[in-house]
Picture 1: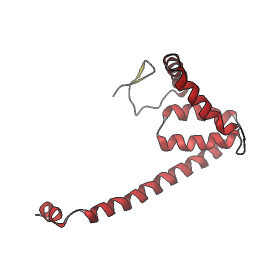
Picture 2 (picture 1 turned 90 degrees about the vertical axis):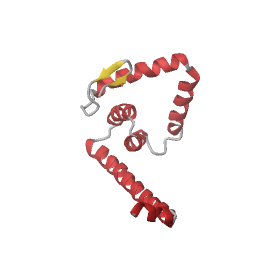
Picture 3 (picture 1 turned 90 degrees about the horizontal axis):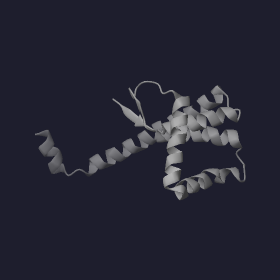
Picture 4 (picture 1 turned 45 degrees about the vertical axis):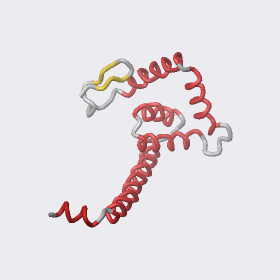
Length: 135
C-alpha cells in the first residue's frame, strides 16, 4: 500500500515512519495550506496557543496531554510534532509512556462504553428480524 504524504510516497503504511523526515514534509504541507488559506492556519495557531496564555499546566504537561490525544485521534502529524515538543520541554520517556498509558486506558474504556451501546441497539432489534436471521 502506498500513502502520499506531503508529495512523497511511503511504501508500506505498516513500516515505521522516518519521523524527522515526516515532520519536515508536514511543515511544508502546512505552509502550502497557509499560502492557500492563511486565515485557516492563523486560526489554528491562535487556537493552539490559547492554553499557553495562563500556563496553569505548564508546557511539558500540555505536550504530554497532546501526545495522549494524538494517539486517541490517530494523528501521525500530531505525534511527530508533539513528541519533539515534549522532549524539548523536558518530558522523559517514562513520562511519555505514562501519558500514553492513560490514552490506551481511555480508548479501552470508550470501547467498553460503546459496547454497551451495541447491546442496547441489539435489544431494540424487532423480534421478527431476529427470527428471520436465525431461521
